[in-house]
Image (tube, rainbow, N blue to C red; front, side, top):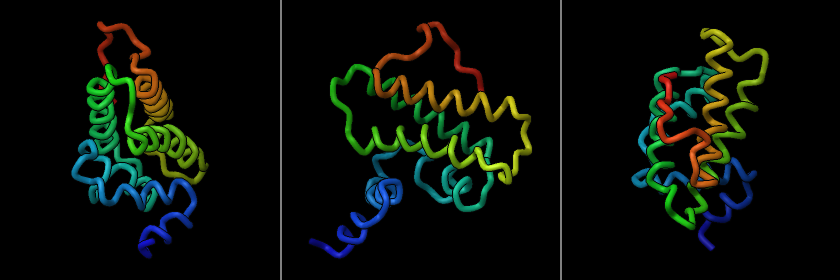
Length: 136
């Protein structure tokens, strides 16, 4: 077994997911894995970049729309959506995380992640077809 794979399987599940995704950057939605990405800034710099989040959640919605008619989903994508809906609320619940935006913004953003995860996993948007997603 290659040394890189051995190291990756010894990591906790979320860290393992990150290690596995390094090789998939060409197939990932825009904004998920690149320098200055929302997740990198949030995790490493404790900075919620509103523009990066907006870019990411729009890319996630595009993938939802593309995938909603499929009966099977790639596990790495499912894990990515699960990770976003699990990690971001957990990480941002820390009281020392800087929150320059109004609390209503963060609540709406976390709800958006939950709604997107629901759409991705079920193949059905939680909203009617006429719903217009507000910019966050």
